Image (cartoon, rainbow over all chains, first blue to last red; front, top):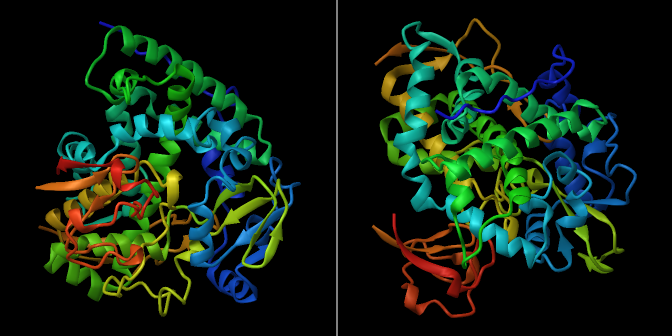
Amino acid sequence: MTVMPKLADLLDQSFDPFEIEKLSTGDADDPYPRIHELREKGTVLKGSYRTEFTDVPDVQVGHLEQYMVLGYDTILKVLTNPEVFGNRGAFQHTLGKSFGRTVTVMDAPEHTRYRKIFQKAFLPNTVAKWGETFVDPVVNRLMGAFIDRGEADLVEEFTHHYPFQVIYSQLQIGQEQTKVFHKLAIAQLLSAIGAPQGPEATEKLGDFFRELLAQRRADPGDDLISHLATVEADGERLPDEVLISFLRQLMNAGGDTTFRGTSVLFTGLLTHPEQWEAVAADRSLIPQAIEEALRWEGPVSNTMRYVNEDTELDGVFLPEGTILNMVLGSANRDPGKYPNPDKFDIFRERKVRNLAFANGPHVCIGQHLARLEMTRALHAILDHTRNMRLDPDKPAPDIRGHLLRVPDHIYVKFDKA
Amino acid sequence: MKQWMCVQCGYLYDQAVGDPMGDVPPGTAWEDIPDDWKCPDCGAAKAEFEMVEI
């Protein structure tokens, strides 16, 4: 039997990246009043989104000329014009340092080639099969730990764990390593604030995946790594460096975002009990509830693009080399597209697609898996509980952060079904 | 159920919904969508779509 490689912990084992992470993702209680103020001044404004909400310096791109893009139509225009507004220049000093050579850091034609191979593993017809095999067992196991109690913290006991555990199952990483794995996955992003644990985590995850990839290539199984190691598009396989970089990013792109998306979905519905009841009574409303949660508080509020050549955007001149902050959270609350945009309303009329997963050639590869996981999580809660409501004796959920928004707790009470 | 799917991003074309933002009204059959129409999620060409079983 093959022995799983051992993932080395950080040298400073007391280092807690989950606490430090907030320095990077922010602790803002509600950034939307400021976002609305900014959008009213103009759709393209000089400055960085991050510095609006935190004094913690961005050591990677904080010194570069930056503009914020705030209007829905303008953001869509940028995201769908990758020749002028690229990814490589924007991410090579940020996510490129944390994850390596991922598709996020690539421009066409390299991006087009590799994206197609990765996307093949995450197409809707593929991930649909993972609902029963990967997602449901994790969801049921976590729920089993609190279902008899009649009360729970849905974040600490459920949403903060299930998307990561789905990834562990897909990669077939043993339970004994998951704690370190989660810690390093979060720590690798801390390069943004200059923490030495950032590059340390990047290197250690790389060593681990390199060894695991060699094992799975030699003896392929039915796990995601074996699949990615052998999948082809147009007769081409993925180079090891590109695949290892993707696996580094998987925890953050696939775990962190779904954890936040699901937490926001529960928060939106439970703070609007009439909408929770409506969904409980008619499960066909789940897709529109998920879309509203993604619009209302998308998992990632801001992404970046790089101006590849001198250009003009909504009358504002942007020199080559400018970093653009694409404030997705602003697009999704643009009152020109969504009347009464701050309101969580699963019944709102949807004339335009929300940009929670961005748009254009870099639209989120994992969006279909994220929606599947959110759907399965909500179904499971509705299947196994009745009368779920916020615990009146505990603090209400408080969504915080300016970049990756999530409540720390969702205290609930319920009856067992 | 079979649907047309973008192989670049996984977007599924739903005839009942169409793509109003892309000037494709609800109810438009796949064959009637112009060849220069692009995927509303990733911008891929119509030729990048395949019929798949969902």
